[in-house]
Length: 281
Image (cartoon, rainbow, N blue to C red; front, side, top):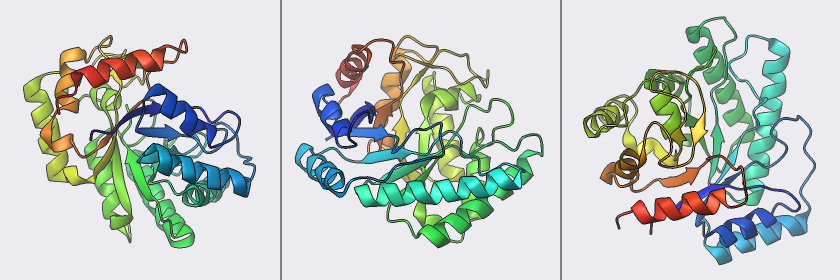
């Protein structure tokens, strides 16, 4: 069975996210475990945790990915933010573990002008400390970026170097974002370009590392390095290319989770309907 879902709101109780996902027709999903733009996180009520685990099992929604808050930056040269980010990261891993989810998804941060080499080293060092202290049950997924500003992670080589710098690389996988891949300059729009992109990823990192695909069309052009998601088939990647990606035999084991625009309550249903129609079992 193919796993297809969307990023779901956690408004109300944490387990209500699963109710929303089920109502939409998802069998996988992504959530934040707290406000993604704030440092404070309230503790989960034990009964809410049990409800979450029960509904996850009853609804067969798996894998579930928890996205790390946006404010965390493990590549920053600012020591105060660096330490604060590691503390918050460890907290989020603990929250993911207690919920029994499969993955924690993380952007790779910004070097803030100090250079990609230093940013990559800072990120790897931070992740080593985090894994050593948190001892996560859930797998951490490194998400490639569009490359805007001073963000690292827009080249597959960056991800390879981060993984090579880890003491426990087996604890880490990859979340491949289709829009970010396209926006950072990889041609996933053409058939030949997709094959070349996946071949390069496989050579550098290994396609078996891709556990989740953030399945987003792009409002930005190829190589723009501008992160702007679009509804499936309405962006610059296009319907045909998105169909080739989700049906590619080397990606069939990954969960496909959309982070497409949510301008109305109907948008997620529309995108899910389009994607399910394009899937060839």
